[in-house]
Image (cartoon, rainbow, N blue to C red; front, side):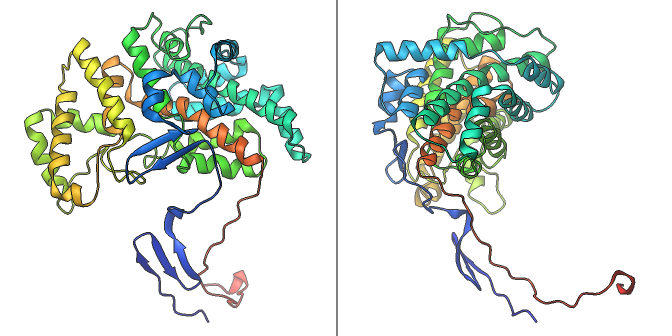
Length: 409
């Protein structure tokens, strides 16, 4: 006979018969890190000790890649060497191109997962590292190999995303150019023309702002897979699968769609008021699991959006609507008491929409950025690896009498 089970949920803790369960592992520490840190109460984000504002205002994505992977901001020679290595690794294996083409009509996140896994099957460095990990070898030589693979993944994800877009529209793919920077090359491959400098800045800033964010769901997924000593491409394919979920990626897409639906800045106050009522609409891009202050990334990207609409206009009033919603949220007691503020997704989709990037490619852009954080955390974790093995509190019966199939009702 099983005992009576009583489960009580109080905030993030579930009181179970086995003891308290931290629901969703919220705020549970899983590793030490020197990669990034968040002060959610005061709205501060650091990469390797540098404030995100300083990096966003002064560094390119390639510089941030060097910082996150190698622990220091590069000097001029180191930066040029990294840019050369990234540019040389942008091409894809023909089998990967075939996979992307075969999945041209699928959601690009499915194609991204499949293409990354395929590319890993043909990367000799990846196979060599996987063999070393299986054999219990992970020293400086293997770590250098892992970092080289990380650079390849960072270089290839933009090509995968751009190729899928081109195939999905029946267009010829545009090969990567080695003379363009990371973000400019992506836009060139995507649209097939020289990109506008402000559009390049928008993509690059977005990549900088999303490069790492401690241990959200996708990074935790990467760590769980990496802790099994799986290969690095499989790690990233799994992280992409986690990012694909609507509770992680996709909020900027939902935010833009909501602005288009609202259609008029004058309606913003009523929409915000309705969101405070039971069963009311959810304000996409407002609130954050960690930040209980204004997301510093949102403040930075808002400035970029302002520059963009000043140059190109705001024909569908997306910036005006978002600004009106923000003003109503910041002044409303309901959001003040709950410390709910705009996050980076509140603003980022506006520019992508006006650039002509389809909604379904917003989250792949996120993956293009976060791949550096995913790989860096796994490589860091491998220095002191331990398999994740949580437990569950079983609340079902025990020792049921087995009934042969011919006697079952």
